[in-house]
Length: 115
Image (tube, rainbow, N blue to C red):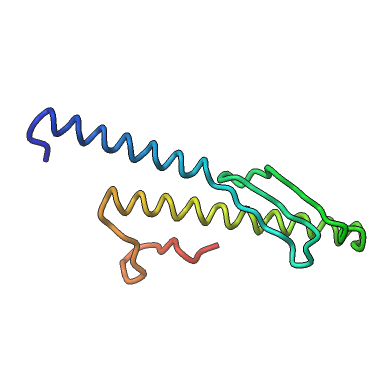
């Protein structure tokens, strides 16, 4: 419970700063993933949008089908990691805001570990 207008303003200002920090952190996510053979490197942002794609000479050894699969698999792995980072940021934000932490023993749906 807030007792004074100054406390309310301070609380709202703090929440605004936290939201701004969360937004900045999510906008700053960049994940780079390289295929096991080193032929393809994909970079994605926090929305899993592809922002970079690099190839090495190793792509010349791949068939068109292998090349396609390698690009898609590498980009997918990068996107998965980006969403995981984003999820960790949101979970930390929510835990701090509410004081509640997901617990596998808690009645409800456990989000962690789901794909």
